Amino acid sequence: MTYSCFDVEIADAVAHIRMNRPDAYNSMIAEFWRELPEIVDGISRDASARAIVLSSTGKHFCAGMDLAVFAGQPDDGDVELGRKQARLRGTVKTLQRTASCLEEARMPVLVAVQGGCIGGALDLATAADLRYCTEDAFFVVQEINIGMTADIGTLQRLGTCVPEGFAREMAYTGRRVPAQRAFEIGLVQQVYADHAALVDGALESAREIASKSPLAIHGTKVALNYARDHSVAESLDQIATWQSGMFQPDDMVESFSAKAEKRDTRFPDLLPERSGL
View 1: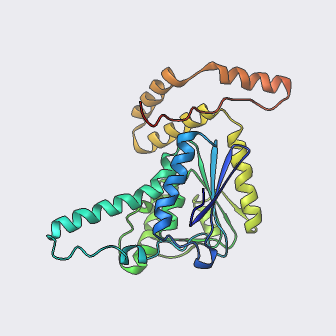
View 2: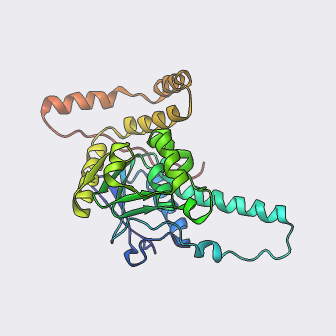
């Protein structure tokens, strides 16, 4: 399928989603917000890959939301204010899903950032499982610099990626956080010299993840996300329940057999999700 804002390639059980509007700094136009959830949800639903890499092209990873998205909204005219604002809330929830789809995917999502990761782009990065960047990368909560409160997910997730004090400093000041500082505070896992090395490194990490049991990886992502939002006691109960239904020893047997036989593991893919009964 052809998309306005993305190219998609699947190889070695890894889906590589590339933003493809470098001349516009990959700004998030209306099509962007519709296409990314469609792509990611499709990969997750069909189990067509075991890991996803989201990368970009050109000088900057993504310049954030194209404000024409809101400028292009129809005028509600004299409609009562409460109803207007209720509809606006629905619009914001739709935009939030574009970031949340990365978190909700059944497989890990790795984001590879070069240049600027600005505003809405940081919403995507914080919703991903892992983040990598180039030496020239920078991260900024841009919304505060244009007089608004960020509302797509950065404020809710950034504090789980970095210590709370750093998250608040980024959110209140709107300062650019350069790559090395992002690495020091734990926002990114590794810094690469250039874009080519970055993409190669992210894909290599994705292939390593894809070599593991897809069911075990899925369970690990579910458990980590659950533990982030719940107490230790609740999270221990969750994983006990998960294991009682999802743990199957066949994958462990395959892991030990492959190691003994000095070969690559061969795990079944996750089953595609059913769209109906």
